[in-house]
Amino acid sequence: MDFHNLLWPLIALPLIGAAAMSVVNDKKEWYIASMGIWISAIHFLLSLGIILTWGFQGFHSLNISEWVIYRANNYEFVIDFYFNTITAVYLFMGSALTHLVLRYSRTYMHLEHGFKRFFITIMFFAAAFNLTILAGNFETLFVGWEMLGISSFLLIAFYRNRLLPVRNAVRVFSIYRIADIGIILAMWSSHHLWHENITFSILENASLVESHLMEHPAVSLIIALGLVLAAAAKSAQFPFSSWLPRAMEGPTPSSAIFYGALSVHLGVFLLLRTQEFWHHLIVAKIVIAAIGLFTAFIGFHSARVQSTIKAQIAYASVTQIGLMFVELALGLDFLVLIHFVGNAFLRMYQLLISPSIVAYQIRDQHYNEPTRPRSLAFLFPSKLVNSIFVLAIKEWNLDRILNEFLFGFFKKLGRSTHVSSIKAILFVLLPLYVLLVVLFAKRPELLYNYRDLLAVVMAFIALLLVLRAFVERKNPILAFALIVFNHFWMVISVSLNDHFDWAHTTLFISGILVFGALGLIVLWIVKQKVHLNFDLVTYHGYHGISIVWAFLFFLSVLGIMGFPISPTFIGEDLIFSHIHSDQILLAVVNSIVFVFSGITLIRIYARLFLGTTTITHSLN
Image 1 (cartoon, rainbow, N blue to C red):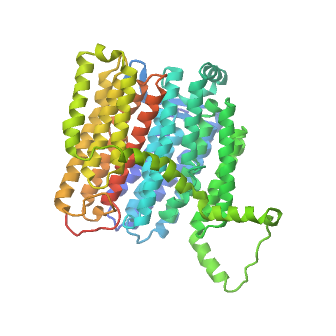
Image 2: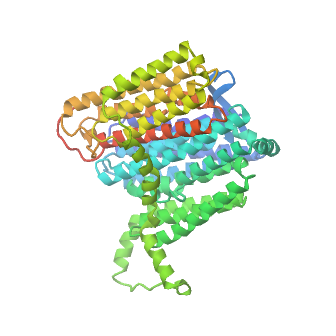
């Protein structure tokens, strides 16, 4: 059977469903829910048919190159699919659980404000999940990975008039973007390791992969650690474990499918898919096992002291995923897949019935005296037991650790940057930038001897600009302009390399210019209409005043972030492909710039358009 024409529908069906739902009247709940249920049922039957046919043909791994989006010299951006046992297991689970959740949601979300929006977002998530697990190369996987991050943000912030869901959505999205640093560095390193954009099918040749890795141990270590960072952040492993309970602010069905069953297990999927990159490295296996063991320890104790059932289930899931990391380090791949199936079904079931469990426990406590379970705590010193108990209640201070040592560090850098007005951009940074471009175009020999140093300096200027936008609270337009402008400095930092193709720069910048202009126009219009309270100090909820402007600004945010609605999403990969293999610092700085640009853009959108509406003016 030709699988070329069968894998695309797995991604297209949910997108078609989302598009069809968008034109249905919000009050037609039965039609919206029926569309989602029938499309997910067809998707499940198609997935089952593909898996069975693939099994009857001998369980051979398949690599399918579907669509060459861009080709230049030795570079190709290809949408590539890969199908093997790992894909089959995740595909079956994704299709089955999505159908079950949609059936459950038809009743659970009845008369909920945003019923249609919820179903559209779930369908978008299903498309992103399928694209991620079917991905045959890093480029395709990264597209699905980004789509998952956006759908996660939208579902956590589903109750967008409430402060806590919106804040937690921004928090979770920020952790997801930290995971992107690992993916970006792994993509960049693998490109230089193979001198091409490799497919995952190449990794099946274990001897070839091992010989490449042994010849380039530093590059192989960067790839491995990048993948571990991405997997740990995506699957809520130490030190990122505290984001998973925060993500439970969304509706229960979305919590079940996202953070109980599917999305939270994608870190495990990433390590399974790319294990040939890291299983030869003892250091990588030790790090994975240590992260898993420590996460299981803190997750187990944190789950026992949670005051809400959803948080308890979240930490229980974190604990089991930690054990999966240990199994991965030990090479027990088949056991990991079985563990994933069991944990995903169990956690989704627990989350879906969690409201009923709470009601049952409230009634039951009136009729039965609770008995204290037996414990082995008496075997340990009381001070140790009490210390663990207190740390578990504080969730091991993981939020504080991230705030002080990660985000706090970058905030300090941002506050030390003295760019506090648009005039500073127009009269200082812009002329300096134009001078560098002219020198590079007309007299490159003047910069040739200092190109490596200048490249890093330009990248650090881009980093300082984005961090200044990250801490900006008074002027949203300034923050947005800094984000747009920092991309130009990032491009010039890479352009200082030899034989740089300016067509690639144009492709990257074109999306920044178009969507940056759109965002600035929207912000200017909103400022003129609102007059007061146009800052980033709090969450203003201007979406309640004009959905149109909120949607247009969200599109501009996605376009600048490199979402696949803009040529920038190809340009980003092109830009990184021009960073030399010995320019590790340049690659790290530019990846941080890219990540914090996305975090800052989402924070601007959330603080302006989400939260409680603070004014009553009409922007229409």
